[in-house]
Image 1 (cartoon, rainbow, N blue to C red):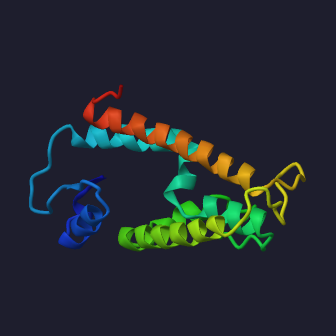
Image 2 (image 1 turned 30 degrees about the horizontal axis):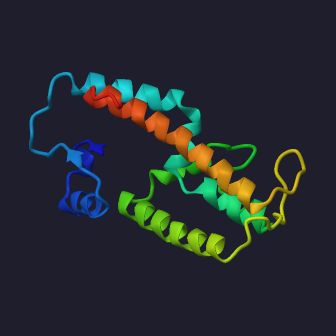
Length: 166
């Protein structure tokens, strides 16, 4: 994971390594590297173009599908019709380690939910067209979304290091 000098700390590096993520973070005392700003701009522009990637960057997508659609609970997401990108804006206010820990906790919770449920169980809530889908449909949808987001990440990784996959 790339990070600029603002993330220069052993705590950030250790948290990433504990999750088997290679940290590439500039040290505060290191000189600016010519060209890195240009590369960073390309990456930032790419993220702006990949609008749907934002759902992976925050915690809301799985919460929505499991809590709102499958369990039929109220949608308590921080975004509104007036401010649809609020969840993205406030995500930067949370430390990376907190976001990663919450993501891991959420993952464990939803694994338990799925393990204790029948795949043919009908969702309590509805999807946009008013249909009640089953858990199998939700899991397939989330798998497709994750694959799409992974493709976006692979594009960014290739832009950064030039390595192409098989």
